[in-house]
Length: 277
Image 1 (cartoon, rainbow, N blue to C red):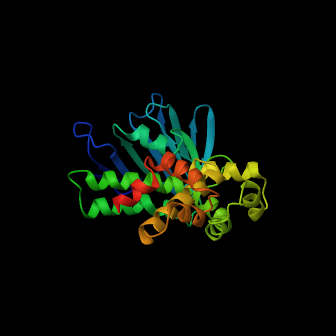
Image 2 (image 1 turned 180 degrees about the vertical axis):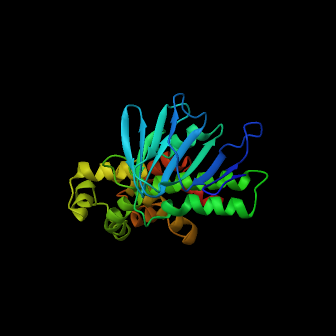
Image 3 (image 1 turned 60 degrees about the vertical axis):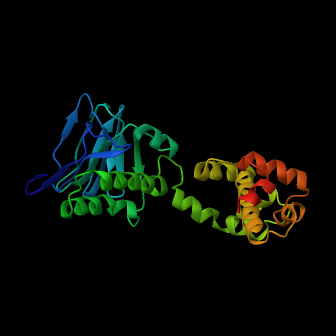
């Protein structure tokens, strides 16, 4: 740990003992000084505002950094930042790991981007909680810190927004009426994309955009997955039902279509699935 009146920092697991994802350092600076790194930083670098406001420049653009905002940078991206006025307080996390890039990609998080979120969300205070936890119970193995950075990236995925995109939490609030509608209509084979779009009073195209941003698939594909999950619940709780009866319960017009869809998604037939349970 490095500690001063205004600045505390912990250095964690190094590259000589790599976990799939690990924190290299985490710190809080209550009087953030100007920083300029012409060659960038060797690890992924996260910086967010606790109080006050700063300005962060990279890739030819400068972003304001008030509360509820932060910057994620890929390794070795040149950048600089400084406060606007007095009293700019920040929290930063640097992290790396052999799976860091793959995890960011799987979460559809931009490696170098400006993020915003609601100040009331858990993302605003999470870094401080991790810092306090590390300070009270030092993690020699780095395992807890590895879990902490993964949890942080999940919160960034859930609450963070870039550009004009909705955060996942906001999108889920918008989609809640439709998700309830899907539960109610899961046995209705007549429900299609148009009917789903009408629930939210949006166009089918916009509805698919919302689902792809939130789940990575179209609205109808999501509905099919819900039907398959429901069929698995039915087959395990009511094993006396035939495949045809199960198909009807989850909105398939015929058993052959249900069997083909189940096999495509699950890799086995419904009959095989039932023998496993």
